[in-house]
Image 1 (cartoon, one colour):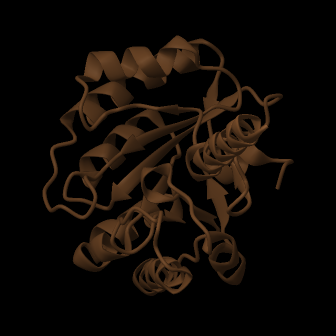
Image 2: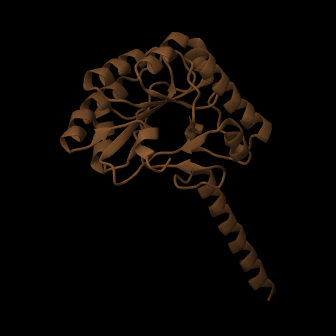
Image 3: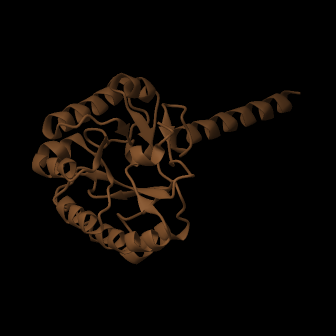
Length: 237
């Protein structure tokens, strides 16, 4: 009887641990706040998103998007916005959507509720002050959510956004990134790429630039158009 109780307790712990892991990192999880990871599957559209910017390389990405006439959503870090306010404004002026990616790009797990709110609020304030745009979307660094995030999102009016495919563009060559993004692309997909590297200055995003330039015409030929996250969620929001 004692061994059965011990086994039952162990299973309970494992189940609880598995649920917490899903809540923290699961792309479909909304345990720690309202969140989405794909758009309306009935819309023949996909969304490009870029995290960790703005950076010194963001203008090169903007030129590629302009040449292809493609909108995107940029999840910006507050510290990068403060460092490169003109670049942040250029993203807004080009008509792209801007989201909140925290102030300093920390992993939020095991952080206090106050710390989480301060990170989101600081980024929100800096983005508004430097670009005139009030973000309505939020992406957690590393896709990690935690206790206290829900209340922070609610206070700031932010919807969490995960992704269907993350490009691994910080470590893979452009050809492999492009292959990954194209391999299973379908209507409503949200792709996660990066125009920065956390809050590091002058990052090398050459693989990202090359991959984006390569996949856009292919996806267009497949009949998919490009939209911002807010657009691709319609009529969901």
